[in-house]
Amino acid sequence: MRETIVILVLLGLMGLVGSCGKDQSQLASKTDQLPATYSVAAPRKEIIAPHVLSAQLAPHNQVEAKTTFARTEPIQASVYLTNPSYIESRRIFAFLVNDEAVVEEQSIAVGATDERQEFDFSFAKTPRPLGSYQIRFVEIARSNAKPVLLARLFLNVE
Image (cartoon, rainbow, N blue to C red; front, side):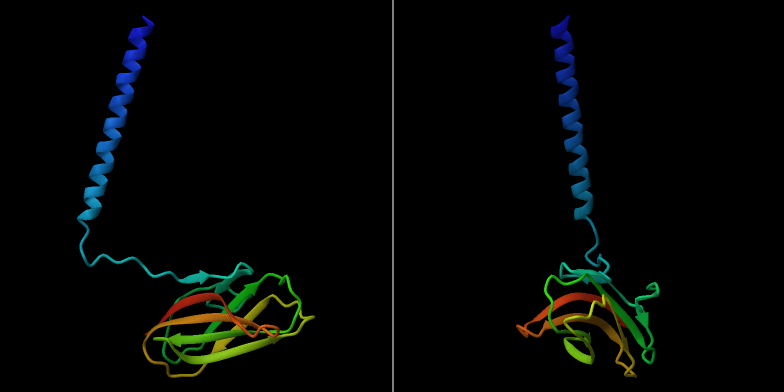
């Protein structure tokens, strides 16, 4: 009696494994048939440094509402940082970049005793060319003067 149950269980498991393999092969063949024009949406933001809590296309006390701006519209952006493990003077830069060319740049100096964590930037130079843009947040500490990319935001100007 036990042998019969074991054989039935093994046959059932083999059938289950076989059916799972068929289902996966059907999924793989369907994804191979996607049209060549299929595209994945670009990311809206990329946090790079571990001490960056967030970055957004809005001042720190507001909620991000859009990623597309008019040519003459100011672009607000903010970055939130944790307290650094080091205490020294540094500067936080925000670069508005289009096709690897810096369109506008801003910076905020941070003293060794400054405990500020929210940094707001506003890009107001207009009109801007149409296209895809990035805002790159960069930190430069006074001791090593080596720029560190903190985060990137992606937006469009239409």
